[in-house]
Image 1 (cartoon, rainbow, N blue to C red):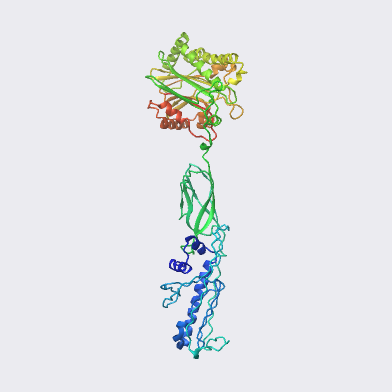
Image 2 (spheres, rainbow, N blue to C red):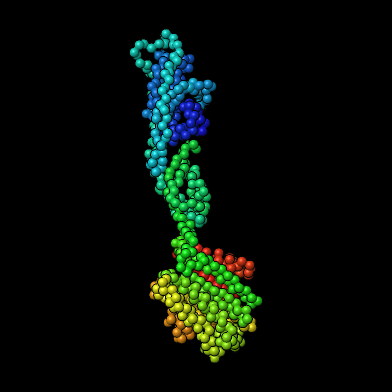
Length: 604
């Protein structure tokens, strides 16, 4: 029906409640009733036109022929008087009729579609009882409950009867007969109802993730049906929108959980006022970051340390940045960070020192082991710079750097290279050995807390650098996982050691007596000379694992270029003010499955 016809119908029914009238319009049989009614009226009109051509004299009393139209499905039909001489044939009654009330006030013209005739004025309105509304059925076959309405008692209606001349009165108990000359006109065949032919529609959409851009078409089954979307109701705060033309959902979902979205649509042949509804199951997986707790560590725990730390050291040649952040796995349980670090620039001899240690997660007091190792190495090296051994190291590094040809890889097996290795053995190597002795002494000093040295297990990475002329001399001792590398942007990356990976994932070697024996020390001590240096980087596996998922990637220049670009963009390395604090924030990057403590030190 057109909007004008619906408004007229609403006036006839006295439907003052929007929801109630909408429910009536959505009643599954409503469309069939309207089509049946319009067809029957058209048939009646055609029969009337045929009759008037053959019996024009009956037009004098035509105005009294019909007193009102009554639909038998909703109320009993009152007795209607007709002239007996020329009774008018009535159309066949359909089994389904739409309610016709009686309108008060001025009549509203209604034209019957497809018939060229004057408007037919509706009769005065009166009260009419409506049958109970069936609950609307949605596309999935479920029903929407309709609020119960109190029963309305119909007001008795007495149909007015126009006076009829005595000569025209029919004989008692004699049924009126149609004129013999009038041919019987059969009503047009009723079209089959389309309601039963419409399939049940099913809507589906893929899962979304909270906080991530989402764009997905809504799948409709069966796919051959092409309904028109009116809209989708999202929960408040979801921040998604529906593309009603293309059946698509876009946006960044801000909420997580399982939702039943209300989808409103209509078929192409539906009236513009028809609104059908269905349920769309929509799952938004939560942002993993929101599931992690950040509980403070217990300050009363043995060997407690701050959850985060950051430092910076600067001189005329370069600077050192370092930061340490407790991993999400520790923060979620409120336990302490196991990593530690130390950085320093020797003001007298110009050495840059960075030490990084990662306490074993399986060791009860590894946080103390990493702390002892870094502090002892730093103290030993600080003293060594002022000793003859430190002076020998400086001279050997200078000779080695000056003896290298520009653009030619340094030769560690040269005479100068052997001299450097020996000097590193008695300084950096002895510092690692001193760390092992200190761990042993820690166990002896605290037998009531620490039962054996394995409870202090830790890795150890020592980085030593000094500018010699226009070049940089860099050396390292590396035991355990993580990474130590000299990086030259867009040119090369030189690893100063190899990560110690165990037989299984997550396994590594730790600082033990075996790793500070002569053969092991000489094998683990590495050094190089570069013409220029973008950065000398030391990191624990909390950083290296998510940034370099494999050992092959650890040695690729392109991977280091990408890492440096990321750090420089986030930290603004050339802006020394608060750069260490920004480095600490960068360590909070998200990587699925990587929740270990993170520590990094950069000489640049």
